[in-house]
Image (cartoon, rainbow, N blue to C red; front, side, top):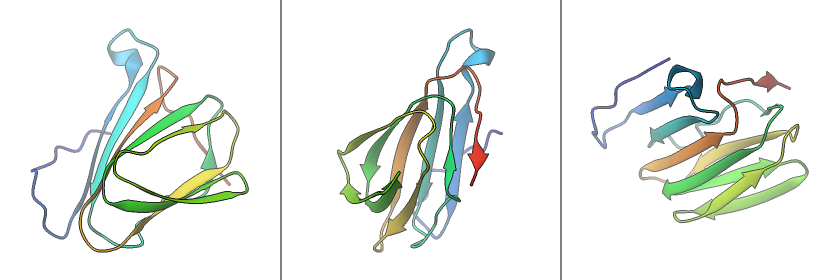
Length: 110
């Protein structure tokens, strides 16, 4: 799925996904931005590692049994087959970039 962001900081949620298989590489990315407090994907896992870089704002990450509150500049490495999710905290814009070490997205909701 490709959603083109308009760059606005109003009350919106947007994300852009790029699968590596479309470009002949073995990494896929999700660029996500929202200012909707509480925004969260379901608990899920992948059969490959994922690296998340928080670019703006704060969020609460659940990674396995660990709960971490993180902010801009934080990099998280999530091992393969590790249940995880995040929840946006505070007012203001949250933005992250997630690198999936796979040519395509494979996700299992838990």
